[in-house]
Amino acid sequence: MPESSIFPISKIALVGNPNCGKTALFNQLTGSRQKVANYAGVTVERKEGQFVTPSKNRITLIDLPGAYSLKATSLDEAVTRDICMGNYRNEPPPDALICVIDATNLRLHLRFALEICRLKRPMMIALNMSDIAKKRKIDIDIPKLESILGICIIPTIGTQKNGIKKLVDNIDTSFKIPTIDLDNQTDLHVEVRKILLKCVHNSSENSVLLDEKIDRWVLHPIIGPLILLILLFIMFQAVFSWAQPFMDGIQDLTGWLGKIIANLLPTGPLRSLIIDGVFAGVGTTFAFLPQILVLFLWILFLEESGYLPRAAFLLDRIMASVGLNGRSFIPLLSSFACAIPGIMATRTIPSARDRLVTILIAPLMTCSARLPVYALLISAFIPHKTIGIIFNLQGLVLFGLYLLGIASAFLVALLLKKRKKSYDNTLLLELPSYRFPSVRNILFGLWQRIEIFVNRVGTIILTVSILLWALSSFPKPPAGAQGPAIDWSFAGIIGHWIQPLFAPIGFNWEICVALILGLAAREVAVTSLATVYSIAGVDSDAPGQLVHFLSTQWSIATGLSFLAWYVFAPQCFSTLAVIKKETSSWKMVIITACYLFFMAYFASFTTWHIASFFS
Image 1 (cartoon, one colour):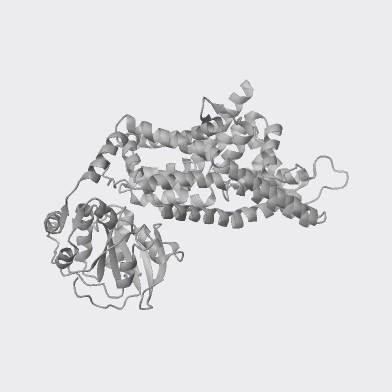
Image 2: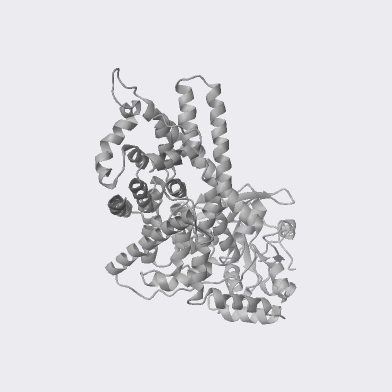
């Protein structure tokens, strides 16, 4: 190991190619003390956390966006380059760099490490996935590689609890300025080949052959898309089948707590606020958390296994037909969780045109906030029965709604393609090796989703529930007034005022109120309906009562029209704000909001009239 120097270090940046395991190392080092932030002036998500070294030195650790080269071809790579080189606005450069490389793919990852070495900054290399390299009988002569580069190289296993112990033990003394002589004229590809010949011996290619054997099926032009379609189909079947017992448990618990509190409180405004406002609104929304977690479980599993880049490759030909390429797949897939990180992820797309189109169609992907609305309406209007032997009809409808959103996004992209001249946009994509998903990483991802959901329930949804309770409860009807008391409230007045606009698509005034408040967050529509109908006198102590009420009081045409609306519904204010920040254009915000509104209205109008005719 080269003789190391001790530098005054308080901030370290993790750099490396995508899929090298940076985030796993980051989570290991910082534990639960990480926070997510955005770089000033651009919307590139970074994670920042702290840890304490063996010498009691408190270090700030930054996980930079993955990059293939310091010669940036996308906006997120430009941020990584500027941070590493100390050229990013007024932000001081990190004191040291940890370059994370994949031990199973040194041919690609060493090239970027050599670019980092050119910077002549204190650094070290974390040779990640060293356990997989050992299983594949990839013999890396680490002392020789250290002598060539002039820096310390420490094997790590980012997915194992003790896989970074050696890195932590040596982090105080392992940073060194590289001594390898690399000028701007050096061909780094040639240099990597020389290093591999000297330092790496691969005595078995069984694992590589296994990847190739799997890819013969997964990437087959006919069988591959069928496999992808089957995986997605099973995923949406599981959303209803797997989550239902947990949903029933939450509904029973919510109803039980609501009845206990109702018996303890005297009749009056406070009892109405807690039962009709908080329990009816927040409790109903919270019951759909299991379905969101099942959806994320599948997405995380596919991501951890290395399948997602294959899916992007499979869809490249389809996306090319609408003027995009496979790089848009990952941002669009992220939008199934939430459109905000999906739009942020478009910074990985080199083409400015493709990036803008992807931003415009990302809101059409069915985000997890829509899932409670879908689940409520499907449960109310679609029979819970089995089709064939194993297919759940409700799951089939949910799958169809997701496909409708995807098809609509492709249609919009195709129309935008017609307006601009097409050009060659070849997809270059790294396909990582298949690996068994890390249970720790999946559980960590699910826990993050629980935190996000609970935060939304405890802030936005709770606030809207209380606000809606107040709007629906006051003012009281005058003496001798006819009709339900809620019709005289502020919510009733507002709903009746805008209802004529939505009457042609079958919406009542309660739905109109839900649409307005839904701009705060998609799932607030469920909260709004539960609160309004609870105050109106409907027995909704348990969330399941709302499903029963809608199925008996709404026509099937209204239910299907509301479902169609939410496939295209204008996004929440947060999404529109991110579009403004990413595009620096109010024009794009207005265009997005308007085209989504008109698509939603047209879809609901068509659905309402067709359903009314047949029913």
